[in-house]
Image (tube, rainbow, N blue to C red; front, side, top):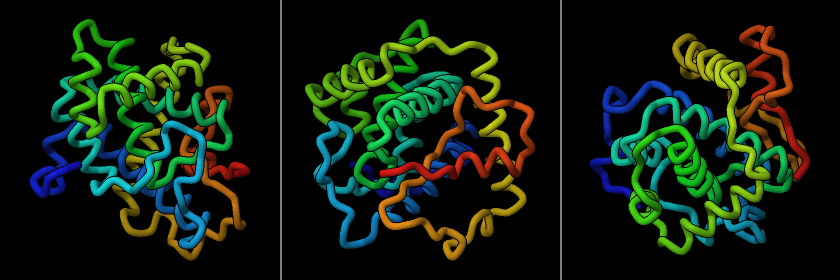
Length: 221
């Protein structure tokens, strides 16, 4: 799905929000994979967001590809993050793992671009960027819209709230790049899943440490 050139794309070539969000999603993906167990992780799900095989491109490289070719504003990635949160909270059985994260990303960013930007590429173009077919892209978009109940509006307060979450994540990456949460600290119970987002209903006065703790909230499979 991605080339070696895209894998080596420097961080300076993409918006900072893309790097921060990709780091957060990579961590959640790895931990959901580990929580499920090496022998149990399989695409046995009825969700359209679950691929049959793991894509051969990292989350970081995939997001860099989207940022490079989609031509959208950085705000679209924040809105896409909000949309992802809304979808996961309505579909508790859907987890962000190696089989679903790429399709979730391309779909939420596509929806955010259409809602936020005055000019955007069509679904056929996004399908090529995302490495899926046009029928798949169309179906994922419709499934997502029904999944969030067509709730696409984002208030300035909500947008600022999620920006604060990503800023906290960025500060943690800068201060503790190698020791945010060591693998040994993740002792999720069998069958449990890690959530990557903070609810829009949560207060905005939490400290940086409590915000990051909420981001790692566990969901029942």
